[in-house]
Length: 494
Image (cartoon, rainbow, N blue to C red; front, side):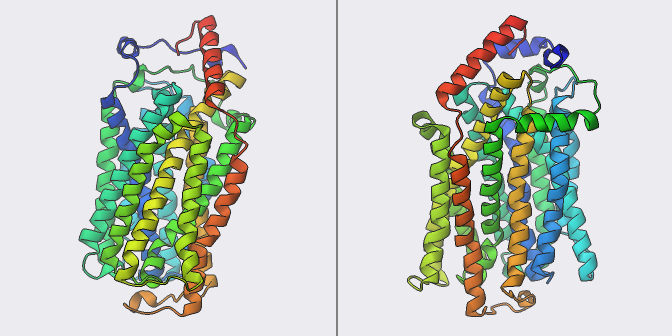
């Protein structure tokens, strides 16, 4: 590596003062956390509504909906690493990350709003094109914000435990943003007529867009003085097209990154298949009223908050890898117990009788996902430290581009699988126009199998791959000390 690639720019006077105070304050963490609304309140929350809207309400075949929503994944495979590399090499008065984040704010809000607002009377071909284009646009805009945002989180703290604290703040804010958008949907826009009411979707989409715009803007404004104080490497003179392939190959040369990336992709795909079909299963299998589905979501959110809150304590007693494995085990239980009981005819509640069991099931899933959502990003930041130790170059942008891609695979591949599966089980395309319609039993069986046991099997594969991850607390302490000594020897800031 050339020496100029590892030089760090001097900190500003404001940065020096912040460094003396020992890193980010609670206020900085709160402002930073609001940016998680872009992902958690954007695709993570909205896509379930989008899939139901286009496949059930607008009558677009499930496979076409799945293909349209997953087209953006192919773009993400190219765009995310480009954004990560671009973000790693920016040098500006706002720091490395904020310029791209600021540019993404209006693009995200506009694309999310339009995603829910197709013109009336479109043919299936044009409707498919509208969904595909807006899927690509919204994914790309969210990536432009979220990739540098995640990298910024890794830079806010370098301590093994403090990084978990930053992730907790971010996770809680994302959960609350998703909860607010979900509550608005079910309580305001779909309160009369339920999810099959087409008139409610455009207003819901633009309201969600306004929430994202507000939270993302507050994040950038709150960090406008802190972000420039973080170390900025000298820019690499090579053009991105020439340097990016080598940079991507370099991060995949780190075994820790490979294990995290592959296991995260598999985990999030499984979670994506399940989440995409939640509304279908609740409405057509468990016969739960649309206005009551929100209470299942609230139970999930409570579990998620508890999982996020317990994750730091669990990591204080256990290794981060163990926390992930516990979380995955809880998710698998959520995907097997109720679904298996229904398939075997042991326990088949419907209507109001199904609401309580589904709330408990979702509560358990929330705790599991809370553990995973805190541990994975914290471990990716640790792996980025190991990367600097091995290759003498910081690659947070590319590392979190990899994690962001893995997360969006839940929406891309997961939605595609769910859409194709609906067509394979012959899910009726016109059921959205028949409120109260009952599915044939064999279609219900297929839907339950796709919704629960199938993701559980995929998650087991992820656990097997992830079990050989090797950065422990003591290993990270050794890496951090080696980096401190190296930086001191070269006269660089931490």
